[in-house]
Length: 299
Image (cartoon, rainbow, N blue to C red; front, top):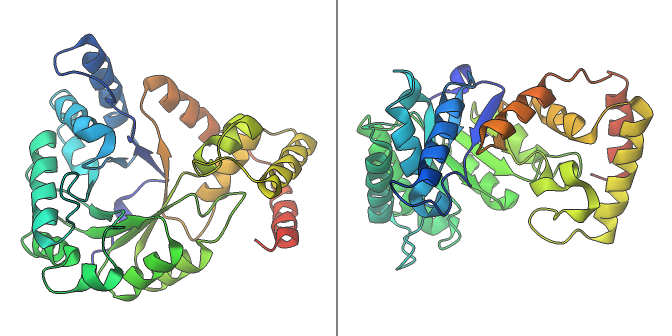
């Protein structure tokens, strides 16, 4: 078990939209590279990407940015292995190919952390079996080209199964530990007990805790129940004179269950806005009131 929590910072910068629809050599790519350089120079511990983000363009843009970033920047880039987009395969061989594709785009030989990303194409048993995806991850870690391995997906129950194997050094869950939903709490507790580093992604629940009722909730239309909860949160924040997005971010930042909060940031403007939210002072008395509100929801 590689404990990486000592090297993470409170915020990890996610780059799922970085480089989307850009063409190599274009002015749009150059702008995306400049944004990526700013992320790498921001002082935050890690920049998080994936083999399939923006069809590989996220990694490609970060690879170009690494040429202009500080010498240690490459050691702060996390990526993920993904299913074969053509065949749907997600086994040992696909993991090794995905790693090779990612490191080639990034222009690096090794990675501090490599996640198994959204393994929906296989069951936990299949992923853990001989020649399964996890075997590929373990080979890379044993070879010393990956310092640590993680599991990054959505279904909390499946993630608990992966964590229970004792194989993983890190876990990344998204949209399941927010002001609206704390269903990842048992997962994070189980991970913490095993010394597994916890990344909590999407603290704004895919936008609704920033944009309000006009936004999606976990990438879908919000239910009437979620809209009612949102209205209660907005009212509570107004009563304390603080913006809901700041409270949503600090809910994750202050949690003893979370080692690092992953927020999607693809431009310098968004990075500035994130840093401003992180600097907001949240009145201490709001937290017990939020706990009471969550209790009334059974969340």
